[in-house]
Length: 492
Ligand SMILES: [Zn+2]
Image 1 (cartoon, helix red, strand yellow):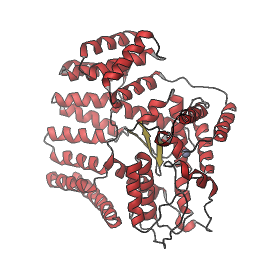
Image 2 (image 1 turned 180 degrees about the vertical axis):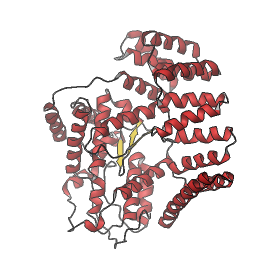
Image 3 (image 1 turned 90 degrees about the vertical axis):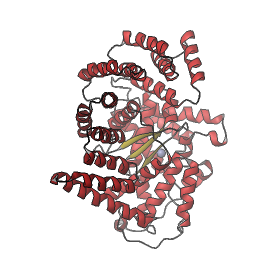
Image 4 (image 1 turned 180 degrees about the horizontal axis):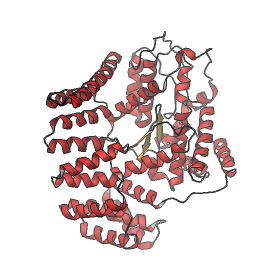
């Protein structure tokens, strides 16, 4: 995979062990024991931040070709906000990160160079507190800011950067989906290279240390990290084989690592900053409803735990119950439960959005639009609210207002697939074909579908006609995407 024009150095078959995120028990002793050889000065093989980004991006593209990432605006927004809060308190607050959620019940998270951090839905569902989820994110952020994966490659002078990119991509894909990863690794090996990466025990320790510091600086409880590790390890004692939590496979947790982590946590006074922790519980139930394989069973569970009052967080359980009922079309009961929650906490946006969703599902566009409008005054910059409002506006044929709201989100830095796709739709509705195709091009580009992106840019140019400014912009973007497409083609 040709990612940059770095000189190709002779590839040797080397045997070390893999990686960052993906890892299985049989390899663990080797990870700890095999030290990577230092091969003199590594100045000649330093990977630039841009190259790092391209490596991460190529992994992110490949991942999206195999998995439909969760794109619910409330869930993705929650994850990004939590991630950004941690990054702001990390040792590299200037780096830009992309957090995304993978619909997979295995407890895992993984980090690619360039700041691409994936979180499995299973990780969020298993976390008891927001602090626990934050502790894993902080650990992953530290792997990126400390450039662990890249540094292990920089020590391997035999490897060219394109090969590196292919390997990192393959190994990270394995973290997201072991079968997919195995296929990708086989493909890399077919190219004559033994896929090798090392993620040492020292790296893990460093990620724990830096991660905990980030966690504390962000106002979370340092003890959440050892607590989460302990719980995973305990759960693991009752399981064998494939039920070992993925996070333990990829980030081996030993008793001494937990003890280290607990000892360090004791040195931080407990100083949790006030924040909206209720949101975590609500988001967790939303995700549970979205990903459950059995809605009927989940509804029975919610109904049962509300009845006996056994649930820790009663309001979140009721919220989940309401969403699950709406999902099977029982709107009257869903709405009456939601009403009860709104009576006690009327300004909570999560409830308002759920109410509007229910109205929209029943075709009550005007009622939904009124709810959005009212809440926009309270939360003018909110991403999830805007996205939902825009979808309703487009249904009501109000494309112009929808476009303005989307462009505003784009300028606020919310450059997401949802924004691109909805902009394409809104401009299409207004018969502005050049803009419609150019936003669709961005949508395809972000999904790693560069050929389709080029096609769309060419169409956008065709429709731009006399608009010189738009033409210049489109032509320059076309050259950029074409160059990347050529690089990818050469790599295959
Ligand atoms: Zn780790």
